[in-house]
Image 1 (cartoon, rainbow, N blue to C red):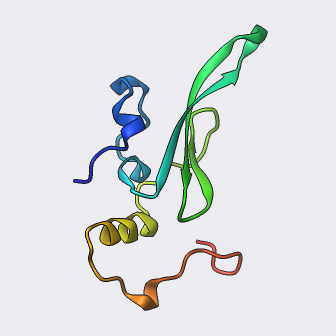
Image 2 (tube, rainbow, N blue to C red):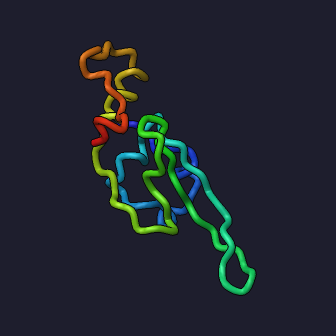
Image 3 (spheres, rainbow, N blue to C red):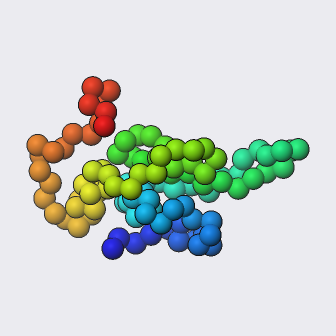
Length: 100
């Protein structure tokens, strides 16, 4: 299996998102640890993930978003990372007209 994203690997296991999240091992996922304003001026730690394939936030610990458990972008990125040839016919990143 692909390695866990570096930001996630540095977290304590109980701080990591659901284990079956596709973005956890995706080469085009950008994970960030955040400090967000909390109650009474305090700061709360959070975590989010931006997908460079979909150009969207795919995980945010401060919001209820659907969990991405499989993704074509992840499959494509892993193939590219391994030097495998991609099918040009399948090279269609989402656009406003073909959003998954």
